[in-house]
Image (cartoon, rainbow, N blue to C red; front, side, top):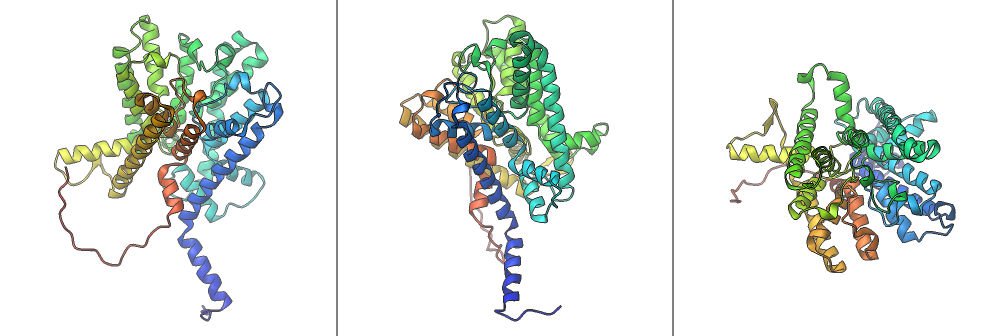
Length: 460
């Protein structure tokens, strides 16, 4: 190999190539952020078209931007009722934003590249890996195809299962559209609904006693929220449970606990005026939907304060890594719980299912918890101050935004522009991930060649 002379054009290109390779991870996070921002802006501009609103007028940019952020970040908070304000064209744009936001901008973009016969570069594969939280770059293109096919299959099954009920209630054409819309919205954990035709901002309360609709929606939420990597692992090792990855086991166990335990508390503390069957159904549905889905089948304003606090905690937790859901993620909570248990037992290593969890995962989990609590606390305080509303109500709204849930106690449409901006920022950070923003804005530092002297610091 012939070395290029110092200062020559060849040497410059070599150094440029080295810098690009060195910072490819940072660049990937930046592309993910810009991709979501571009999607949001495009959606907001399209929703301003007169053909998207039922009154034939241009919807103010502030309203379309909030709607676009909520849809692309699969949240579900709205300032205009989806069924009564938007035409079918507007609803179609919202649904497209939900689908792209749920699967990930990079996943959808790379899929189009493949359809056009374009070769997927190494940099693009790295972005795909960061986008779906895959453990490695190898096999990422095949994994992306699996995600796309699996998502379409699940959404199609959900639509077919919902079809008989909605066709019965709204006729064939409208029932078909309602089935597709709610299936995609539920699978993507978005929480957008078209039930405003019965009562504005009513979500699924009119189907609170319908066990079939409740069950289908819950299954779609759970499947979309456990993560694409868990799907793949289950497909490959469903008959060999011991071969499942540690992440899959953590996701499944934590998800089951976070569904059944809150459901039991809901049954004991809430919905006491309902018959037994409806009480069980409402308790279970609210437990499932609270972790980022955003649908509700009961009046949330009638919840007790302990019930609201429980919902706030669940909204902050969210779904699982590499899924359509937002929030801190189930694995973050699981790792922190295991780390705490390790301290209580006075052991050195954090272990689970006969495996040891690395220190990087523990540090990241602690950082994510800190970032989400900071965003949640500051957002709640500012919102309460600006709107002059009770702090608990604002805590519910901000946890719903940063967890990309979409549940509300009814204050979203009446919020001032300043408060809406706060919620949009929280929704965006909740979807792309607070750490993603940090990694995108701050270049990775180089570890020093040596280590500083160790000194003990007392904590607790």
